[in-house]
Image (cartoon, rainbow, N blue to C red):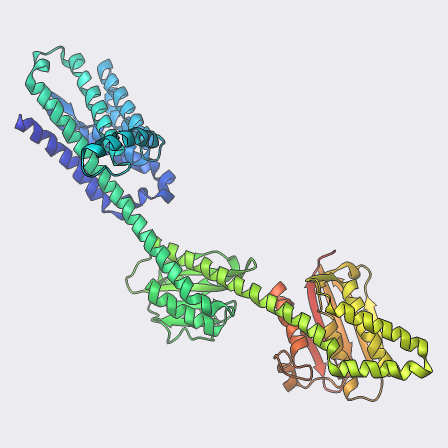
Length: 587
């Protein structure tokens, strides 16, 4: 009696040991991950099918007859990965039986396939578990009244299903004994009952142990994912205060340090579209901050906008001989659906890139992109607020107010009708200034605001100010950010009339070229020196406190990108031309 039990345990232990050994290999472990379940089905079916063939030669006695354990790997395959794996494993295991001409072996083949399908349907991913939980919860409540501690939710249903599968498989196997060997007196002995019961319990325990091994694999994956999420959230929390001002050298340096410490990379780099903004870790001696991009791989990511995984030094493409970096993940940083930079995590030496490290890097790239885009949105809102304030300040400016009222007063006696018209326009101009401007207006609306401003300047300077408008047909319907053109015209008037006694000519030109609206404001003033031209966009520099042109420039770049910044062409004593381009949008 004991010998038969030991034989069953020996054969089961061998099968469980093979599964445990396989679970220590990375390839086998990854087959059970949810992300690779569909692609892993044929591999898992093959593995458990071959294991079923091994089980076919592992036999134990029942009533003096030999029974194989070919059904055990099929049950595990179905429970672990679903009915397709259970069916596939059963078909591989049953193939030798099916090739035999004896109908009894084909009947055994059919029963194996039935076992695979049933075990697959009872897998945790199917609704049978929920149904079993409903019944087992009633039993659990009953037992909790009889014992001091209730059963854990769901635990009873697993054991129930394991017992059920064990009973089905052993029942199917033993039901074939009379067909294969005929009715034997040994079927009615206490030894037969002992062998059936011990086999039933042994197989159930084997299923429990093997499923626990597989569940530990999934628990390990959940633990790793939880650690990744914790690292990502910690990095996001520590970098958020620094990225509120957008992506620059200072914020990039702090962010790279945080990622290097928490992600445990060998080196971390952050770039914009042209230069290395920050670099921390191995290779800092030649990957210098502020320098141009060195690696070909980084340039490829900026062009494609896709994450790139590099597993050898040659593919990194660093031109520096002896660079210690051996592998890398390059993640695009995006803002407004454009690639504006990259995040690069490097490993050195013999360290290998794992799928978990790649997923961590990818998640960090998405988090940083979101933070950068939020910073851009906040900056754009601030610029719009500044534009509104500039509009009010320009009109309420004491000098503007004083000069305009003096101009109106000068016409009071000589041209009373003109004075009255200017006063009405002046009131209307101020009323419109206090209204909250829209984010986008048509060129026609923007020109109305510009012409209202110029009306007072013309009244003030008389024949000394000459304005020519060259607006191409169809351009008036083009949309552009509000208060983009007026500050440029105001700047031209100031510089065109400040140091010249002769006529100041202002040309305002608009045209549509290749799907873009091109605007030009040209004056014949004193021009701007090359030294001053370099500082023209610095906030607070120049006569207008740097607010007008710098605000226009920053707003255009924030909305449309670097390629749509303000361009200024100027020669001393020859005048200045300010140009800008806006992607074509019609109202």
